[in-house]
Length: 416
Image (cartoon, rainbow, N blue to C red):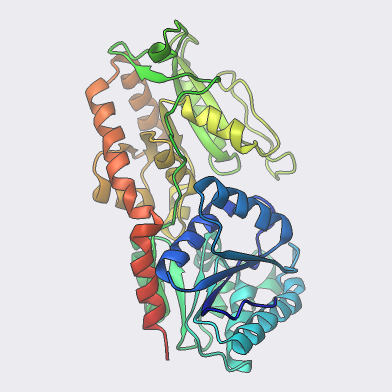
C-alpha cells in the first residue's frame, strides 16, 4: 500500500466487492472524490479484478489519470459473519496504519457490512485515527429491520453494531434523502451518525446514439417502436418492456405481469436485461412472454444493447426493501433515458417529486398491468417525450460534479 507522497491524498477502499459488483457505482464515487479534492491524489484500494472493472469504467469516461490503483486482499464471502471478522479487522488495521503513516486527508469506504463497520469502529479507536472518514452503506442497511436468520450472527449484525460507540470523525452515508428520513424514523437515536449523498452515476456516452444492433429508436403515434427509422432502414419492432438487473429481485412479479398482459408479439415484447442466477435458492420463474433469460451476468455490451431497445423499464421488486436501500435499476433506467413503470416505493417516489414526471408509479401488480395495456392501446407520444426530457435534465443531481461539494462538506464536518 505504498503511497505517493508528492501531494496530499485521499484513500478510497472497497472492502467487500469482487469483480464487476458495484464497479459502475465505485467509478462514479471515485470521480466524486476527485472533484471534492481537486488538488489531492486519490488512491483506490480493492480486489484485483474489481480494480480492473472500475478502471475500465473510468477509462470509458476518460477520468482515470489522477488515480493510483492498489490491489489488496479482501475477505471472501462466507456464510458466517464471524468467519469474516478476523479478516475485516486485519484489512481495516492495514488501512488505518497506512493512512496514519502517510497523513491522508480523508478515507472513504465505498461499502461496508455489519462486521466491516464493527472493524472500522474498533480500528479507528485502536489506531487512534482522527482523519475524516465516511462509509457508504448499501443494501445491508435493510437488515436493521429484522434479525439474522442464524442466531450466531445476531451479535455482529449491523443492527447491533450501529448501537456501539461511534467515532466522532466517522459518518455513515445513506444513498438518498428518503433513506435518511426512514433511518430517522427507525433509529432516531442514531441519526447523528448519518449523512446523505445521492447515488453517484456516470452516464454512458451518446446513450441514444445508433449502432449496428439498433440503428436508432423512435416511437410513432400508434405506439410502434421503430429501429433504423433515422437511417433509412425499414425495420419495425413492437414496444419493449424490460426488467433490469438480477432476477431474484422481482422477476417473478415481472413474469406475472407479462402473463396477465398477454400481448401479441406484434404489439409488445417483455425482455429481461439481466440474469437469473443458476444457484438461486428459488426456482427461476418463467413466462411464455419473456422468451430468453440468461443464467449468467451479461456483458456490458449485451446489457446496454438490450436496454437501449426498450421503450419502458418495468420495476417489480419488493417495495418495502427500498425504504432503506437505493435501487440500481432505477438509476440504470435514468442512464439510458428510459421512463419507468414502477411499483410505488419510498426511494423512487422521492425522485419523482424532485425530477417530475419520469414514468408511472403504480400501487400494485394489477395497476402495472393496466398501465401497460393503456400504453399499448394508445401510446402517449407527447407525455413520453416529456418524460425523457425530464430524465435528461433531472438526472444531473446524480452526477459527480453535483455531488462533490456535498461529499466535501460531509467530510469537512467530521474533521476533528
